[in-house]
Length: 178
Image (cartoon, rainbow, N blue to C red; front, top):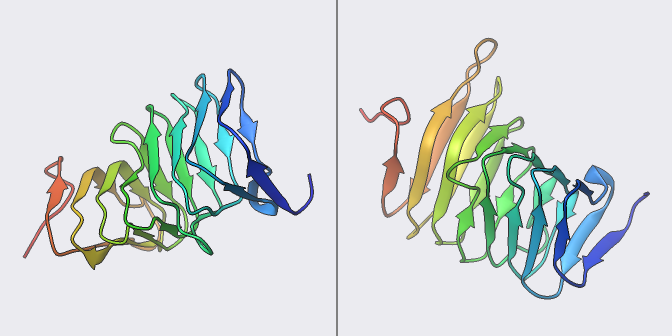
């Protein structure tokens, strides 16, 4: 508990939830790491490392306070069919940003997802009222998203895709051009 930094010295594998103390603690690691749960939740505060992270949480919810704010990750890859709760920017340095094509990412605050020219893959995206989501950094990476759903009530939400390459939307309601 409290503030400070968690340093992952190895991979984490458990059948239960992993709580790295939400918004009160930072987490870093000194090599590529994998976190695996059996359909359980994973909670992070600030996540910063020059290395990559794979998260296999099954149907569990993965929550981030921020990713790569002071040190962008090499890559971030998620698997499973659960929910991602996103409240702050996500930054990876040239590798892929894969939030799971079968996962739902709920965006509750305005934020930017960038991969420094790497590919970005999203499953379903749910935007809260008044949120602006920017995906990409005008680099050469492709962007793939299954669907985007705005708020049912309240202020409208916005999404901007920034890439010099391709945007693949897998739902007829995902993207429109004019």
